[in-house]
Amino acid sequence: MSRARTLAMAAGIATAAVAVAHAGPAVAAIGPLRRRLMPATAGIGDPGHVALTFDDGPHPEATPRLLRLLDSAGVRATFFLLGRMLTEHPEIGRAMVAAGHEIGVHGYEHRLLVKRGPRATVDDLTRATATIAELTGSTPRWWRPPYGVANTVAVGTARRLGLTPVLWTCWGRDWTRSATPESIQRSVLRKLAGGGTILLHDSDHAATPRCWESTLAAVPPIVTVCRDRGLRVGPLGEHFGASRPG
Ligand SMILES: [Zn+2]
Image (cartoon, rainbow, N blue to C red; front, top):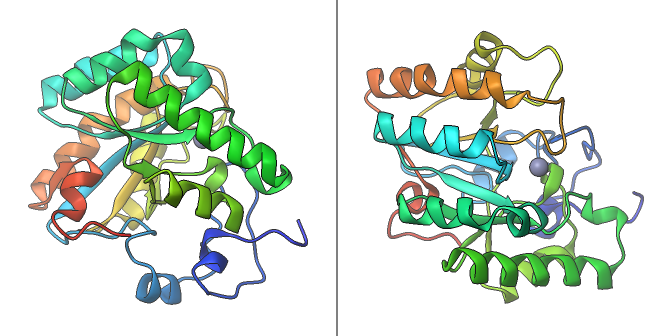
């Protein structure tokens, strides 16, 4: 890890702390500096909007249920897919696109990029992006590295592939063994503000088995709270509007 560079460092921000816990945000230690210098990468967009994002899918049981739930709520979201998962369930990826959701790239494998060599990093992202575009019929715009940690090779590769890195401003900690629908709501709402990006998971690929059940139960009340606060909920494309981050 000594030579690892985070997304934040790639953006020219020095930080000594790199969180490598599950989904640990590499930029968590940066705080206000992060918000001032790289708001879009941190997921900060339209102050009247909240971006809803899901990582690690598609999952054969969780994702179709989530798609039905989002349809009922009239909400569209952004899904950061794993190439390997998508090859096993390409019909779910196509259903996402048909329902108006956005597709992003998480990776082909769910591995910490900074522990991989440059060649493996380039190969993973290139393969993931090509697989996702081919199987969903949609060109992905966004990229979120596994665990929110990346190096300059990964960031450069993503940009060459036309992908914009986006992290998150709040999460549900829904991958943990102790997560409940209530704890997920509390975790998200504790830091939720207009312009924020919510990270949740529609898969247990890198988490406690069936943890997504609590996530699914937490989504409708989270959407309701956002709307009660006068905030629109939708995908990243809406979140950044015409001012696409680059
Ligand atoms: Zn992930």
